[in-house]
Length: 157
Image 1 (tube, helix red, strand yellow):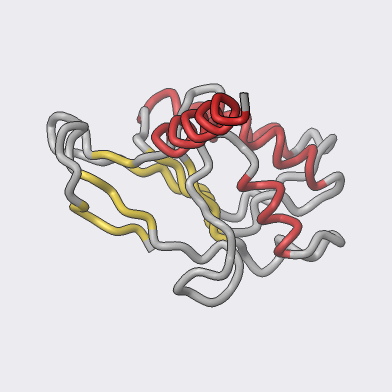
Image 2 (image 1 turned 45 degrees about the vertical axis):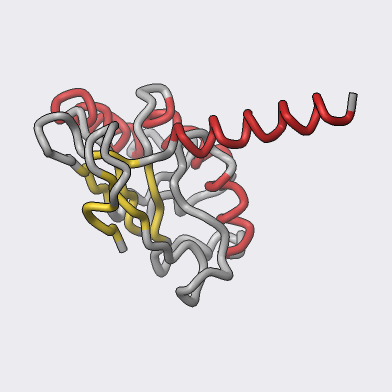
C-alpha cells in the first residue's frame, strides 16, 4: 500500500512540474507578457481597470508566459489580491513567474510569506529561495526547445 501511495505522489509531482515547463512553440517563438506596478488593491474599483487591461493583453497576445515584475498586489488582504490577479493567468493555463518589487512587502506580509502564497498557485514557475541566487523569488528559469527538444535554448533571469 505504501508503494502505491509513494508512486502516486511521485507521478503527481512530475505532472505538476511538467505543467510548468517552458518551451518555444513549433514556430520557434516564445512570447512573454510582462506586467509591472499594477498596485492592485482588493475591493478598490480603481484596480478593476488594471485587471481589465491584463485580461485584454492576455486574450490579444496569447503569451507563452507571464512575468509579474514588482508591486503587483499592494493592498490588503494580500492573499485575496494574489488570488484575483493570478486567476487571470491560471484560468488561461499560462505559466507565470513573479519578481518582487519594493512595495510588495509593505502591507504586513514578508517576502517569504509572499513566496509561499505565490508558489502555491498552479502554473507558477518560481521556486523557493535558497538556490544559486540570493533574495526571495530571484530565479533562473530555463526555456526549452519545442516539445520534443529537451535542450535549454534560453534562460529567463
